[in-house]
Every structure is written in structure tokens, then in C-alpha cells.
Length: 403
Image (tube, one colour):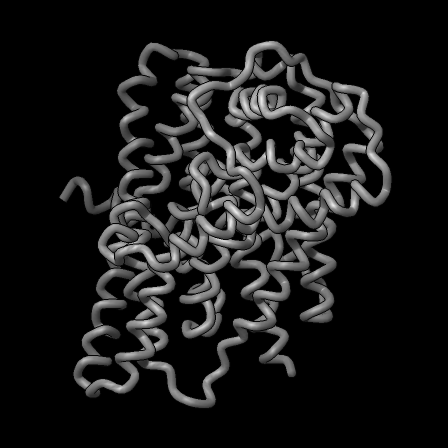
């Protein structure tokens, strides 16, 4: 009986407000009692683990169910969404190259990064993606290989479309059941954010990032410019009305959680629930959201471009227009393959550095710097990537409904 008023209060309070309270409480705990953050940090670890555990199963069941129960003539809008993903990622790379040229960053290079191996070229990135597509489905679920999960879910969904009505109904029921579990996990987001923020601020604080302030300003500035200027322009081209209410909704309800979970895969359940609240077509968002978590990587394109150009500026290498254009294309292509490479976007920096003839050992020093500033860089990058998945899906659906 005592817990009932508390439960009612939580139900009346928006999840975003609860997350904001958890954020402020986490910062306060880190500043006032940093020694206590080890205990509450378990809440953040538990939350991320729960999201990562449910996300592969959710994607597999939802995609397979959506395709299996798809009726001929129903709109899916996948093709325009893919085009928006491509345009957004390429535009982000262009913004990063221009910003790095206007405000060049230089780095202090000394110790090379060890223990990591970057891909040898774009061909290797594409090979990794191809191998992930044909991965064993059980292994794909265990490793969170969303490329493989998508491939098997699409194949199984197409096969089940020709099955009995009861089989299709079973997958629809499974989809609803997994979605219910996801809702329960997401309701724990305020506690998860509280634990994540407390440990992050207690471990690193802001002083540890002071030496890389300029690089961070360029990186985060590019991501904010893309989120608040480029993406709204792209959305406006689709819906032909003020895009900012939709942009801010996606940033607030998807970007905030992605910022602290620092995982596009872990944020897939959050995005799917947001897409449902926006009233989008389930047949569309159940495929486009997990697909976006795999290939829609505007933030990764910015990271690769800015850090590669920072290495070039540090070594005094002149970047001509042709090379800058090539870097934009390479960064966009590499960003799309970032999720298929261990280490994400940072380990693709040596590939971009190779355009300028920068040796691998020097490039790996840049990777090491990337890991140092990763607390902010990776959080902002994930927030941009993940919120854009929902944004472009919503824009495509609204544009088709309007037509």
C-alpha cells in the first residue's frame, strides 16, 4: 500500500523528466560523494546490460514479424529512408571537413596505441560486413551482430509469409510480448542514467578533458550543427513544415538516453518505442530503426573526418580540395561500416589517415587520443546517430502520408 502512491506518481511523471532528475542526481552524487559512485554505478551497468540483452531478440522478432505479416500494398518507405541515411551521413562528413579547415586542430603525438588492429582498407570493412551478413543466427544474437540479425530476420520473415495464418499470428504475439518486456526495461532508464552519470563524472570529471578542449569543441560543434541545422533542413525537404518540433522530440527522447548509454544497439528499443508513440508505420520503423543503428552513422563520419584532418594538420600536411572531397566520401563509407568493426569509428581513423600518407603508428596515436576524449566524443556521436534514425524514419513516413 505504501508503494502505490509512489507508483502512481511515477506513472504521472514523464519518462524524460525522470531521466533529467536521474541525470542531476548523478552529477550531484559524483561531486558531493564520489566514493559512493562505485555502488550506484552498478545500476548503470545493469541498465545497459538489460538493453543490450533485449535489443537483439527484439530486432529479430520485430523484423521477422513485420515482414511475415506484411500485406501487399502496405507502405514501408524503406527506400527513401535509406536515401536520407546516405545524404545525412555524407552531409555530416562535409560539415566536419569544412569545420576542420576553418578551425584546424593539432595534437600532441607521442605514445602509439597498442592492443588494437585497424582495418587495412575499405575492402576489409566491406568484407567484415559481408561476413556478418552470413553469420550463424545464434552467434549473431549472442554477439549482438545486428547485420546478421537483420539478414536472418528478413529471410525468415519472407519464408513465414508463405506459412500458415497461425504461424504468422504466433510471431505477431511474440512481437507484442518482447515489446512489453522492452517497456519494462525502459521504465528503469532514470535509475540507469543516474548510475551512468555518477560513475562517469566521478572517474573522469571535466579536468581530464581540458587538454583536448579545442578538438572536442570542433567535434561536438560539428555534431550540434548537423543535429540542429543540417538534419532539420533534410527533414524540411521531406515534410515541408517546421521540422524543429520533431527534431527536438527525437533529441530529447532518443538522444538523451543514447548519450549516456553510448550504444546505438542498446538504444534500439528506445527508438522503437518512440517511433510507436509518434504513430509511424510499424512495418517501416521495425526495419529502418535497427538498420539505421547499423548504417546511419553521421556522428561516426564526423569523428573520422575531424581526427584524420587533425593528424594531417599536426604533421603539416596540406589538404587540397580533391583530397578533402575524397575524405568526405571515404569517411561516409567507413562510417556505414563502423558497427562491423571492433572499436567502432575510432579504429577507422587510420584508414582515413592513409589518404594523406600518414604512417599507421602515428594514426594509432590519434586513435589513442580518440579513446581519451571518448567519454564526450562517443556519447555525442551516439546521441546524433541514434536520434537521427528515428528522425529520418519519421520524416519519410510523414512525407508519404502527406502525399
